[in-house]
Image (cartoon, rainbow, N blue to C red; front, side, top):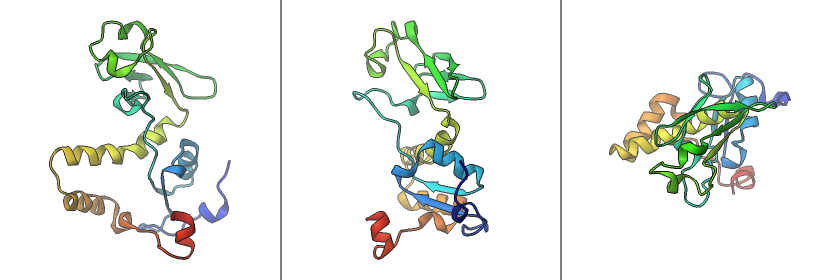
Length: 173
């Protein structure tokens, strides 16, 4: 479960700590948890939650891990039923029967169920930047303004572009 020594040290990054970059294929919850535990600065693009049949994706639901609840886009809040291995399930059940958003949310006669990963906290944090960028675009901020906001927040390394030759082409090509 520990990270290899070459990625668990104190080198790289803007503040002297390790910074890890990657694409969506590497943004799994378990990896994010290990990187956080190692004290790394995580700059991995995380896969968006899957969308089935054009319905609401999981990120349209407000997951409150401290309260142990999930709220749907229509404002209905249910408890998370914990799983033994961590994470759990939020079942909306009969609350979906008369919901005006049901057709956008579920096709199940038993209502929508939302699976909560044991790594949900790490995934939510990693997806926060995507939501922030969507919000900034919706409020009319330009690409340059958004870019500058991220440089101000994370430092210039946020703009890191992988090398287009050598090892970079093998890793990112």
